[in-house]
Image (cartoon, rainbow, N blue to C red; front, side, top):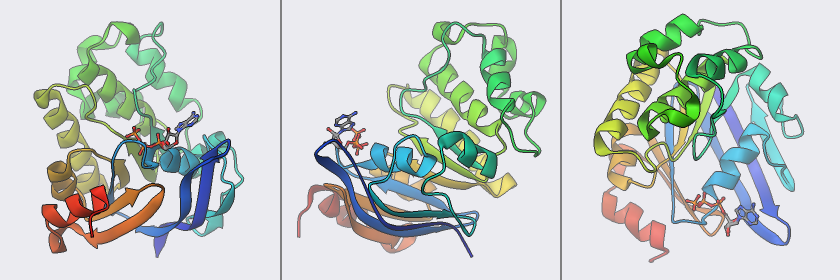
Length: 234
Ligand code: ATP
């Protein structure tokens, strides 16, 4: 059964329609990469799935229930977590406080502060450091850890590599692979690096000007085909 069913979803910013009648499904345990040029609508889509942005029309069904009109915190309680673009930590709070605050709204599950620190050993010595003083990679690990503290069934991850060093990107992707392989997590991630998207995802969805223009299993599509869809080349 699909964990997530998106039907004719439309969302925008004022007069601008950023997500146009998008329909797709994500099965439990699957990793789906969303690719597309800047401004294609990927961030708006993820935020609409998380309840951080409202849908104009269409529906979002999570685990068989229509959550289209549920506020973000209620979706979190059902197991939908967003790792937002730009990390958005509480800069004045410590790493530990950032994690514990997220845990307060958690649904019951295996993720605790201890487990997050085990999953991201780099965070252990940083527990008492303020969010604002961390490097990009450290912030990203904290941001993912924060989402995990809510015990998600579906993790929505927006441009996790943005602004990180290649080493930090590898470390973050290694931790995501660990989540999918060992914990059976379901992931929808926005990734600008097409090579990386094809490597980590089971399926790739390419978005152009708010519409899905290509959807394919990543082992049945080439990088050139994704690139052509990305730029709208026939
Ligand atoms: P990026 O990779 O740059 O984040 P994206 O594919 O995630 O791009 P969105 O950020 O969802 O795309 O943007 C889709 C469209 O909505 C763009 O035309 C963008 O300019 C517009 N947009 C996004 N956020 C806002 C906002 N807060 N107010 C007005 N327009 C916005």
